[in-house]
Every structure is written in structure tokens, then in C-alpha cells.
Length: 160
Image 1 (cartoon, rainbow, N blue to C red):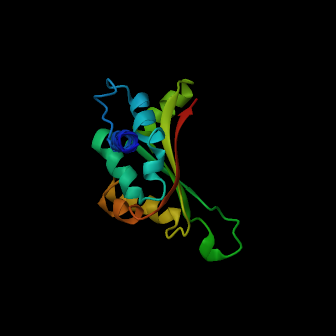
Image 2: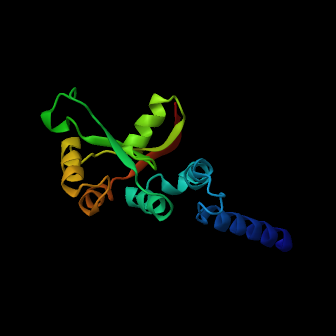
């Protein structure tokens, strides 16, 4: 009986360690879509409830931040201070121009969509201003503001 329990514990430990191993683009044969699925979809549970910096750091270790888009609460919340607050982000490895060009040609492209847990501390206009000031999709000031958002959900999306 002890031997069975020890064997099962060993199997669970090995499985848990393998599940926590990071995936690299090289291991995926340079296939970016496969990398996104293995690194983020298959490991979704490792990111949910964690700071957004964990997603950003994992992404930046393997891919450039070509394009970073935000979604907000819009203009309809009744309280002024609840309007236009950033509630999700989409990461693209292609630049904005490449993404738009692929879309115009009806070619697939992929993004990583990340929704956040409230409270949402910043308005979208602040992020746009910082991107413009830094002349970067994700410069140090923007990273600093984004890093503590908590991930609610994460999904690899094919866009057509």
C-alpha cells in the first residue's frame, strides 16, 4: 500500500513539475501559433489570478510586442470615474501595420487576449499617451502601470 501511494505521489509530482516548465519558441520549431497555444492556452491556469507582469515577461522572453491594444469600460458606466477604464489587453507579435495588412488580405493572424480582474485603476487615454510619449507599444512607464493588473482570463485568438 505504501509503495502504491509513493508511486502515485511521484507521478503527480513529475506531472506538476512538467506542467510548470516554460515553453520556448525553439521547442515549437519556430511556429509562433504553436508556441502561443503551448505557452499560454495550455498553461492558462498558471496565469489566472497572477499579475499581468507574469504574462508580459513570458511573452517578451520569446516574442516582440509588435502591437498592444486595450479595451475599456466605455462611456456607459453611470459614475464618471468608472468610464474608459482599461479592463483587457490584446498582445500581438506583429506590428500594427502587419496586422492591418494581414486583415486586409483576409489572412489569419493571432493575438493573446487577457482580461483583468477589477478594480481597473487606469483610463485608456493614459495608456495611449504613454505609448505615444515612449514611442513604444510597451515601454518601461507603461509596463510599470500594467504589471499589477490581475489576470482574469487568457485566450489565444485567431483573427480573420
